[in-house]
Image (cartoon, rainbow, N blue to C red; front, side, top):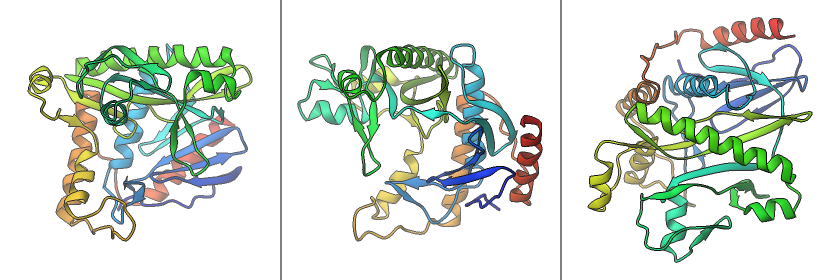
Length: 314
């Protein structure tokens, strides 16, 4: 069985937020219990079927990278009590996401192709082509719009609007670039290129913490290093390590999240293939063998593990 959606009632729980793929339980404004479900979203819609082991893959990739960067930046994690769960400190989140881009692709490329040469107040050199590396990584922050989607914003606007103080923002910039450098080095060892990613931060008192997840295929784009230069030279698509295969399947079956379009049902073979692809992602990014968690009584397992962990934390 897959952890499609969860309805726990943990000791001290004050509220729960059901995101597209994760359920976040607030415990007395002291701890957050983040449950990674097997739900999958694309084009801002939750798909009807879930992908077995996807939640475990994303939770364990995030745990791996958070542990590997704890010497650079304090992070929110207190304990990972279950393959699908991380428990950490409750932080007051900053209202900006720090996006770091090392290559011209995705949203930045669409802006560039439309003739723009600045993104979030950062200048982009003339004469670049899609998927080419910037001279050095750039920071292109976003902020949540009222409707909930992300909007580009410049450093100057963030400071002028008082969204983040200058002192804190300098720290966010410094942390983001250090994390990206470490992520790039770790990816290189696995024959990968960390193309772009986003980081979220929060604060307790005067201390800034890295929150949420980092360097997973949900928040980051990776290229395969092998053949990158050749593909760039011949203007071919780069080989990506991401959930792009799900989007491609949906497009082939007439769904891009537009009005009037119906989400197609994913056949069992595709769901199983999706599960295999996520496990491959884990093994390629981390270099470790994936150990499938027991899929019987998943909810009961999570509840026991979380309650036990909260007792030790409180």
